[in-house]
Image (tube, rainbow, N blue to C red; front, side, top):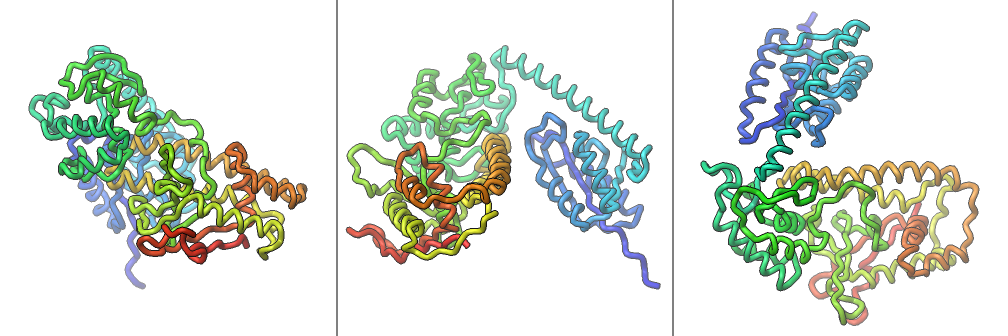
Length: 484
């Protein structure tokens, strides 16, 4: 007989607040957990750490490493989950139920250093675990109430009440948070404000800050216009106290710009950089997003700027592969030209001049699939931006929540379309009329028709100047893949 195979173990460490990002708390947790693991002779497969993240019912930030650990456990790759205490693992009853389901499906064991080891295979063991979870939840919610009361008192007194590092102030100053102005960053803010007033372009402010060599509060280069816009519109640099997007009073820290300048910046920015309060994603404006891809495989984005007097095929009216979103950044097409090519192709398919495969009767609306791909890509981009320090978790979540809600709506609509597909015959003449209608209010209908005939549109690079000829780029630089 061979030696018994040790159980595969994962250690999970979490601390709710680590302002200095030194990870002392989670390192201490790991050391205690490793002592327990060594005593049982288990094999540590991985250590999953969510530092500076809450696990309470009020927490809005996702716990990526917890989710990764659960995915591995649910796939049968882990036998034991070890944490310092039940409260380190979760303070949410729903997550406990997920752990109970995991144990029932995979036999995964839960061990803690300080909270005991609940036997989830028995009714009494599950009851004790649920009682502990309820106690942890109540304590976390009481803590949240105390924190909110304290924050409200600080706002009323004109004091700072939390938030991420603020550009324009010295981080770690002995005078306190936001008490010492960073003269270099403050100059960048004021110079950037002047550039914004002159050009009305956030991109020009970003380029200025890159030339000046100033860095974000996390020490990274300014590469994202949205991040620049959010920095400029931050009321804190005007010495203002804000809550839920509303200015509630004057602060007691030094201001870099005046309140009047702050209001002028908001006017110049419009909605750029403003946090959205949930709801549905912005109304769609363009025909091809979700369908059009660069040759490198990256979805192309509409990039439109039409100043008065500019001709139809404007330099700033295009679909473009954006390097900041993972693309090659080497491919673009004038939007009206590309949409005209697609419009002619689909019209030919409707009229029978172009042969395309017959779609399946039970196939959900392909336009929905395209939008779902676009939404999922947007969520992935936001998560990558958080990992790179471009956005904070809160900023990313403000964008992700409405996208997730929209995904749910689209999934429900897919089911309804499946039920209706076999009942509604397609009138080709009516479909062609709808396709050729350029009313912005019927864009959703044209995207539905597009999805019936087109799976995706692939755009090939044509080299420098290749898309600027009198007749546009070569027609064969666009490949339209028909629907299966």
